[in-house]
Length: 197
Image (tube, rainbow, N blue to C red; front, side, top):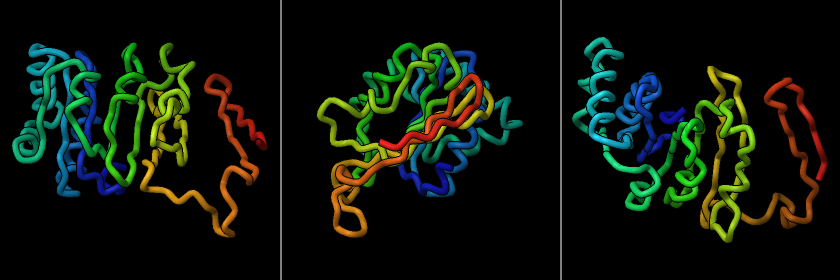
């Protein structure tokens, strides 16, 4: 997905003991798109565990991907996001208590970004709504979001920044005057509810 978006700056947060399959995929996608991949870990022990897991998870081949355009940054994700600008693709783990703050702190690129919450079926993520990350006078606008019941759940959103999206629809009408259809998927039962607003 990151390669299809042609992401030039991909950031992910990794928690100790977590799988590295996503990291390997993001590193490969960054290599193909000619972009950068940054993984944020909380401490030096996590950093060494992450690098060791990458070596083992990729059969020894994944370490060839690491040196060029990929880096591991140590620090609290919310603080690290303050220093990174132009993020095109962001992956956070919904099991972290502060994952919504990490999403809010991210400085997205001018063309918008794709934001991904993995483990979206976790207890912390069940009450999460993308609007809570985008509200508050932000220059961000939710273009589309989708929940995929893959693994422990993926919650994906395409977010436009102020300069990236037009405020008028095809006929020149403003989008606020058009009716909208909202689709909501119940995460427990899988039922789809469609509401006209």
